[in-house]
Image 1 (cartoon, rainbow, N blue to C red):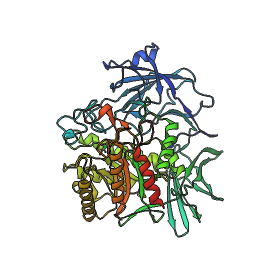
Image 2 (image 1 turned 180 degrees about the vertical axis):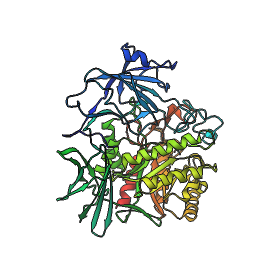
Image 3 (image 1 turned 135 degrees about the vertical axis):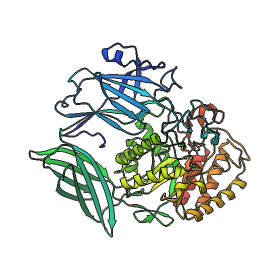
Image 4 (image 1 turned 60 degrees about the horizontal axis):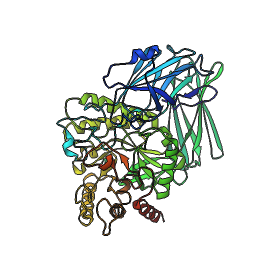
Length: 583
Ligand code: GCB
């Protein structure tokens, strides 16, 4: 699915703004009333989570109703029209002018409905029912009874009862687009880059809608070079391989981007065109190393969240800029989109600024029981497919993460992840595929994943307060995992809560000093072991969680920045360490 863009042939109109909104606690289905015009709603901002916008809806997870009216903008007549939702959490059902458009399950990834048959030049009414209620069959799951919450003290008895450690924000969380394309248009573009010697091969695959004979024209521009190639469509697809001598490679040090333009040529000339930025680079696992453009790379950075006061998980461009500024200030070169795909705009900036991204599906807190397994399998396959299709052209994305911390002890886990791993590899053979686990030696999926990604909290949840005991145990476990799997390891989470402004000498738990010391000792250990190819601190910023006895103020305080992005002592410590490593 192509990211919405505007040019001479196509147009994307952002429907963001204040939409009419109401909660529907009785699940009474107000849809019919809303079609015909009664207005009992209140304004809600789109995009944003609804939970923190009002006094009375924080823990209300749905269903709720959104409604907006629009006229077709100038130039939209005679086009193929779609409504594209960048992210709605969790179930979304839409109607246009009373006609059902469809139902979509799962937040954080885009979906689109064709609206050409139902749309009018004026006074269109779009109605959306959104349901974010937690359910054991959903991914991520919630309200699990007799289930694995016993394993996770941080989730036991929390409210709302999420099977994961972040607040289950709901609503239209990213922009909604009205997209106009020519009746026959470009549908999808996939770019792969390979290096051989001092040349690069840029392989571009394009899909279109409509039949008849047509050509695809490919133009690549950058670094003072310009390449043009034309190929005929065979059916709905066309492919070109562009040879680039002496390319400028994309990397964190030089995040160089080329312009790729694809045009659709039919009898009358150009009928559609799409331009995008691409980077030329390779990423591979070789032995116990991770190689970017053939050179070993070490990841230093964060696990994090899309989370901010008032907007919840809503798209906030200034926050994205700020977060990159803060990550850069610490010396980070990478992050993981824990525990769901982030906005496409976040990845656009990663491409531009040179950050490396582990791109994760929304499959967090998975557990394995026969009931509901089939549905979860279908959903997880949908997530990996939609994630790869959305993000495969970003040079910053160096790895796919299938899941975070599944409860893989069940024998059902291995075949489940083997299948997902294969699906990811088929969709994208160019990137390593991994899974993030707390199970260590017991994680069956590590046998086939390309890297081992491990979360560890020794010195916090175990060996609490005792780093002298924690560190040797961690060191021994890492060596054993390396001996067992023979793969590169990334420590994808480690950390300690620190209450902002809490101090202690000698350091003790919940103080800023203890957090800074724990992180420093972990990082110094990681750097002694060549098979460890990355360290991601948990977490970049403090973030909102469900309420529960493990989370004072319904907050996870493992951030090295506060929720409003002020550095704690640990952020300064990381800055010193990561700059020292760079020297
Ligand atoms: C984890 C989870 C993360 C939690 C973190 C914690 O292992 O992956 O979502 O927030 O631990 O702070 O407990």
